[in-house]
Image (cartoon, rainbow, N blue to C red; front, side):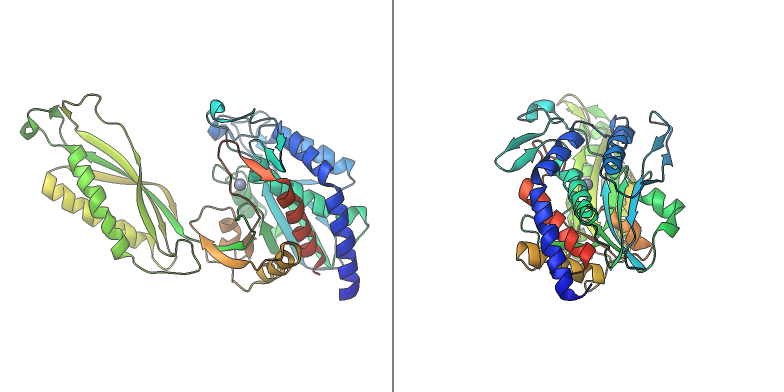
Length: 416
Ligand SMILES: [Zn+2]
């Protein structure tokens, strides 16, 4: 395809995608009625949703889906689905992937929703329902970009592929991480990967880097006693409170800035606080709280650990308590995708064409599924245009973003 032909094909495909808006809304409605909550969050996994999706893909004459199930004893059927569909291009030099996840988080308190979280409500261009944005928007956009090429009989310049994975919300052990550990050969070193699972309102944020994550749980042990006789015990809560204030120093201990990130510094924030005693006139003998730390990749998490331990020893000395720490999450950042990697520049072009804005590569606080691919040296970019309603009550997706993102994806497939 020369560039003029490619442009003409892209225009045709764009129209096809816009015309498919009602079908896309219909697919959102269907996906939403099948809760795919992971067993760790009390659900029965993604199998039913995957079965529905496979049926649609076959009905729409997609290339036969390849299955890479991850064994999991906690769901009916004993496995978590991972699905791949591939379309051969003119060259197999690389594959342009779009990876989305099938699972959703639970709706949370149902009464906080204006309408049933498992039934899409359409209102002024917004589709409300659990999963509509995270990650159904990505799923539907990817499927309809791919379908538009198929329906027009277009052979893309390079191979293109869609991956639908399980378990993104609870660690990816049965999804992206499973694929990388057990089916690494699916992915080539020149491949490009788009993960439409985070973004901002105007579509200008392309996520290419993450911070390291350390969650730290502190258990401070003292000695419980009556509120009127503090000298008979050791107040664990008071010691814990001092430690929390002391840990504010971490901002000065690890002061580096990197303007790729928003916010541009490492963050060390007290978050969870467990209940201690039930009445006011008891001096607590135990105090448990946690910090969520997001650390710029230039720092080693080991150095954070030793610094935190020093503060703990100091508080132990001053207050006569003992403090133990645990790390429920310890995730050193993967090396970033280069800000000028082909996937990034191709995305920038597509976003400019479709949305008329300049997108820029950025870093975020971490936790996207892209890390598993970056760790293996595969350049992955996380991008979507969204209002960032993921995991919230009254989650919604804007119809125009679903259609616009599909058009950007078609632009990537066609390499216009
Ligand atoms: Zn997501």
